Image (spheres, rainbow, N blue to C red):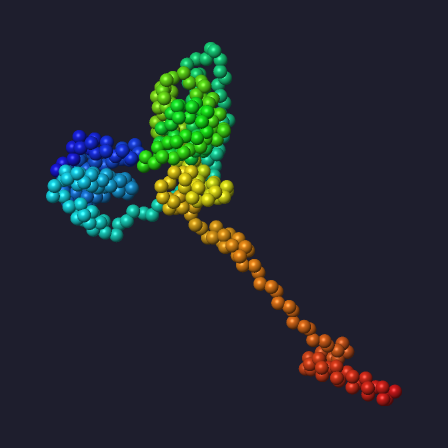
Length: 354
């Protein structure tokens, strides 16, 4: 059986709980499988993996493409549309083909404590003054500054994913009047995000000057919904101007907020998980709360101080008295009682001679 464009469209359309990024990645992976000329048979997963290993692809891209084919054959097998296909054997052949090759453990990048500088960068950006005689270019420039201010305030306030922020509508936020909004997050999971007063004010200022009828909260200069690449470019340009890392991205706000809550605001791991919308708390712990020696040492010190008070200091041993007028070598070889007895004998002897 071959993968056809119609089959790809049907399959991707069935992924109701997947994000647009996942849909796009799966489409690319399945198109790549089609170009390889392989059939959907029991050995297709292992053969496709070998084919991808010969291409200049990042390892995570290769894994994503194979996963796309795996999900497709699982979907076809569930609906009996792939007769004679042995899914268990196909997955086993893939594991045997990879051998000891395992995907690298995820190493989260340290949160950038300078992310608030990006917000301040746009807050401090000069806003073209409003006037009745503004040119279209001046109007666009003014709206762009107001939009970017509202966008950055939304990121650092809600800690939402880029796709979640761009899915917001003016009706949802009521042009800045709502302080919290229910959204469909990753995996179609429902959760609430919260807007700070500063974020609400920035959104209100932006919406007050918009004259378009686009329902999206954030729009481009063409009055269409803003796309992810445009937002990434806005953040990267600001980071470059501030001398920050070239890898700075909108997701950096999410990492910063989660890290700040755990390390500086004493928010529990469970509450941070709920705030960020993680399905599994292990994700929160792995990405935002790495256990390092310094934190363990501090925790142990606080714990010991609370439940294990220091032991009482034992009393000092008594110091033996010593006759002040005896030579050290004599006193050193005698105990206290002998020294006193000998002193009394000397005094009695002296009294008889008197």
